Length: 209
Image (cartoon, rainbow, N blue to C red; front, side, top):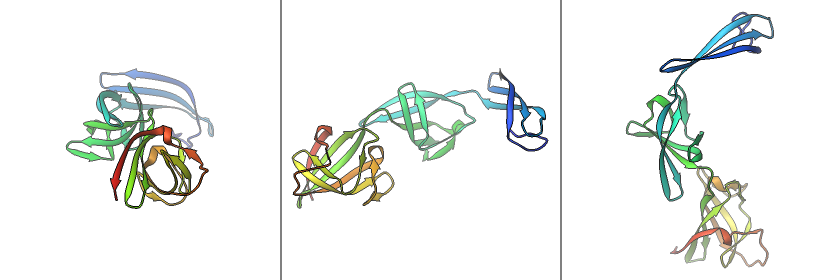
């Protein structure tokens, strides 16, 4: 909203009206420029919301539903939506027969998303020099893990060496559980530890390295 006289975007809304047609929503604003005092009207229009197919993953399960969105808007991976099944984060977008990271909503066939209202499920590996104890953990999404942490898990006390996230591998810093794919660790001969993840184990497997 810019003043047509001086170009300032410092405006006051004096009045607002919403009009609707079969296909569009229109909002008419009466505005006053705070810099030069000019009073003017501006109209914004957008296509009416339509239902779009939404598939929500929640760990090993998926749920199909729809969500009403304006075809005029744009959607991209990482956007957060409020669906009838709770808050979700867009992970992929299907346009035609292709998966893309960004698209105009009117071109979208299916939106793929992950629930942000359930615990994050991460992998946690313990290197036993010949075998690996591999765990699936369910953690609070904002739980932080850092390389160098001393952790109790199951019967092991281990040191975290590497954290693999959705985007990279970390050997320093920290990451929240919601972006962690897997944590790699090795046993240490300590009696004390920073925290215990045993209660968060969802599944355990043993592998040969």
